[in-house]
Length: 171
View (tube, rainbow, N blue to C red):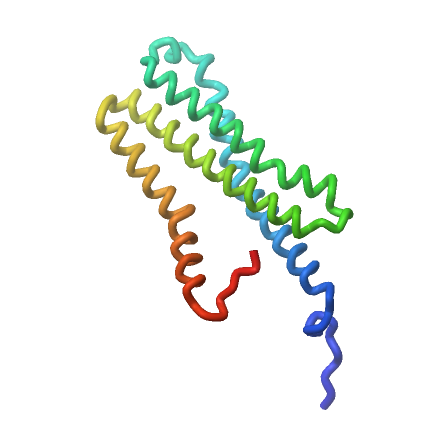
């Protein structure tokens, strides 16, 4: 029985790195498709708040929380949408490795902005409903959970892998 030669299994193919970069870029863009709708909904919600009658009753601290949430959501949208725009303009230029590196950094920065926007939004809503220390506590718990789950778990894993022989990271 003979096996057919498959180009995908050829270890000497110089295009392997390009294919890997392309697949990683597509995977990242697909991840952004999951994140973006949530950020867009949060941003849309925040856009409506100043036009409600209750907005005039916010305290100075609540207004700052709103401002931080609103601006963080806007910056998050810009950062998270940039990889798609960049990809659209440069996808045939053959610089997928650079695109992937840039897109990864933009996505991480965008997620950090999403975290800030979520914490500020939760603080604002909770402070309106249950003012004072309860709002601060709930926002702090959310912030700690997001930092750990979104960034801490992966960072710990990266640090552990760096200590192992033969565990060199590609990027």
